[in-house]
Image (cartoon, rainbow, N blue to C red; front, side):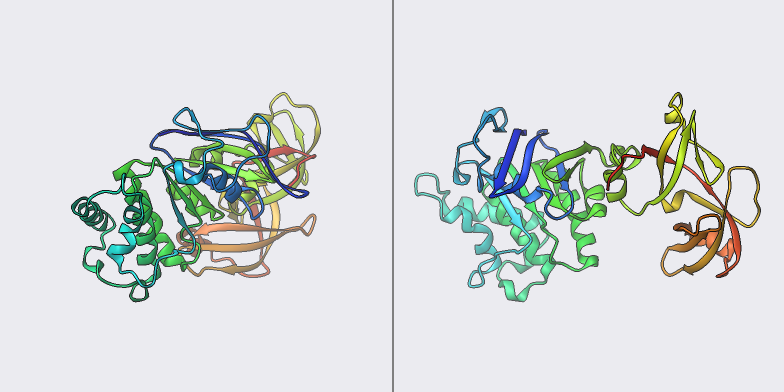
Length: 358
């Protein structure tokens, strides 16, 4: 069941939530909608669900090629799971999952035996069979979210829509549940749209990621594509920590503080101001100059807690600070001391013209 939106716009008063958004989710694909607060993620999800409708015009919402733009949510056969589980406190786990089936009109309501079979199958799928008779108050947050997802799947939806489903959980449980969600999706292959503002979550779980900004799709691609080849400064900055260096582009290089660094994609471009983007893990630190492509810096502080070590450095020529990320082994070999001079080499440098904005 593929899902497609075409030229969808939505205003709330003077605020433009969506501005001509077009997006297609292939059948069986898990796509993450990623972006900062106010970028339009949840509004787009609600329009796909039928809980909101696009502004008048040529907007379309298609389920497997069928135009459902004006069809209400109750007729779209979409399953929902949200950040707040919305489980019924007076119903046990089994009855919470069965609820959507029991409230169907008599003509389409499954028989009791079929309901039981379907719920038991889902309990097994979410690995909570022993908890069927417990009530929500007796469950952990992670277990409640699994129940919420099972309830959404019980009605056999054509598409599964998830709005920040793990947002209310602590970091460790979030990691466990997103691995579980990926595994679940690989088993059932239901077309899924997943809203999150957590970059790590989107990159780990999704087949493709659509990054939204001020109501528009900034870029869509596989996690590897958008991380390794960001289409704009906003995407580059949003997908993790990044250092910015002012420089000037010359044929195949960017000159930063009098030092040239290779930027092959700029080959043939004229001499112009530019901003060089470098991720902290793409900076090599040494005590020896080792060649012309080095910037002189001084260590301000270091933090080696966890599997990676972070260094705060300051450039000696401009006084600008930047961050370097080292492996534990690299940190132990270097053993940097606050205040000591070092040299840095910038690798995998990405350049955008000086009219960038973040």
